[in-house]
Image (cartoon, rainbow, N blue to C red; front, side, top):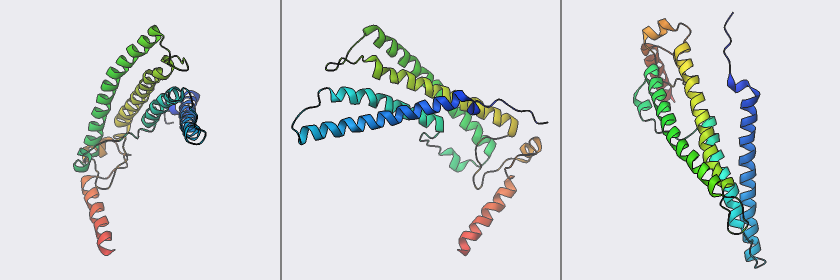
Length: 214
């Protein structure tokens, strides 16, 4: 019987956290947009001002922006400039470099998270209020700390998850046309679904032949 490994993504915690992030993004987007529209209508049609509109927008925009960044970490969909992937076709090497990049991401995010935590504590101690509506400034600015905290959570999770896949299955990324693994890797991981170098070259030639016929 195949051993079942614990999967955090199948837990209630994972799903609840994901839903909370989505709700915060939706509320932040709707309220920020509504406030801006209401402010424009009020000013240019009724010639009145929406007192403190910028403070309300700031409150929801902070949480919208940082929860959006968190959701990008959850989807692992942040923009990457992986130029090496264009030239490196050995999937094991490509995945090893990806793990190094993920480790560096965690390192940098940890530094920024430390600064965000100090900033969060400073705002709590200052107890500052917004000028017009007297909104505690710690509410919008706490989004910085919680945003980086949740980004750290997702970065660490995917890093550990990918390391385990790399060790157990030989790779963790989806192979593209031309990607291959060495014969030694195929021997170590008999069930690996990645072609050898010769098989990858044959697949590339076959694909080029189809394009030529078309």
